[in-house]
Image 1 (tube, protein in one colour):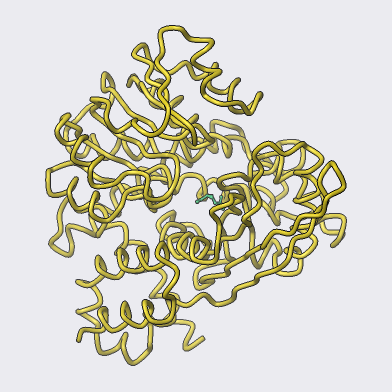
Image 2 (tube, rainbow, N blue to C red; image 1 turned 45 degrees about the vertical axis):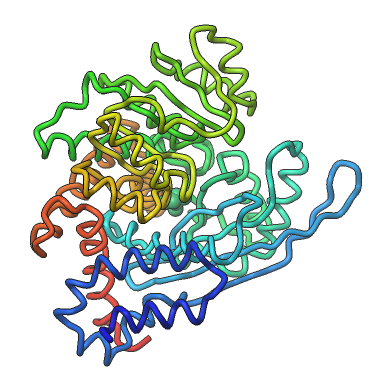
Length: 444
Ligand code: GLU
């Protein structure tokens, strides 16, 4: 058996109940086959893939907290420090009831390659908890965040591991966590990113993942001789990534007609009203039914359905495996031109293959949504030099990074005879730098 097959089998045997992690490992290793086969003997001898697929460290801890009625709750906290070959561990904290060790490992594994693709010195990590922020009071959120950080602070630091936001962790949660870190350690340092502007945050970090997604999508379309302006776009989700993807898409002249949340979705034929969406989701933290109530021309549908709308471009910005084979078939039959992933691994493997086989331009999340973590790295730079850059400076750097990622993934695919396969290209481009650094640093 080939080295890739051996390692996939080993990872399957060792992690039987972690389907998302296995999916991420299979997807990456399958697409790296061409590169690995060229160096099979050396990589096998160095156990390179065994090391790459095993986190350097995993921290799991208890997070007890008290609700407004005095009831004690206990959640599981995680920090997976996956790979520090090219820099301190970097990656978000997901707070969602679906979180388990397999989910955090999949996200941490993806983060290694994504962070490498940004060209910035950041390793891969991820963390979070199965805590559900939905319906909790501000005080309950603070209680959870303080308890979570009381343990997490032992494992992180501005030069070792720098967490950030992800699903369920936004500006409010980062604020509470930062306060607790500072209180316990006495350090005023850039240990978290996505901070508020008054205490070391970076301008444009809030917008960065969504804006970056559109910068990359725009560049990918341009490389293929297609204009973004005038196109109709389906966005899923209505969190930070979806909101700012919608905003930038509209700024670039496209029309976004859908968004969704965990209970339903909106079809707005006039184009999503971003100001209203922000009011509903960022200020009121309410359901999309509130959007519909304020916008009579829009339709609200229960359940799932954004991929049934006829669009030119689909931007899955909600969560993993939200776009399956049937959705891909529907998009293709509706004439979709491009799919770019704002979320992490939102498209299943079968759906990705179907889209690619039908000539749809497909930008994988680890390239397309790298703008968030890239801007986090820019926040780290600003914290280190104790300066803040202007919005325009950060935004220009972000755009430049996304354009470079786009060309790097396209070039890497071409080098290995897989022109236009950006999944393969992104994995190879991300992998090359990590392997180089791992090899240089010896067997660690
Ligand atoms: N959670 C985001 C991601 O998936 C951002 C991570 C960060 O800024 O460190 O890349």
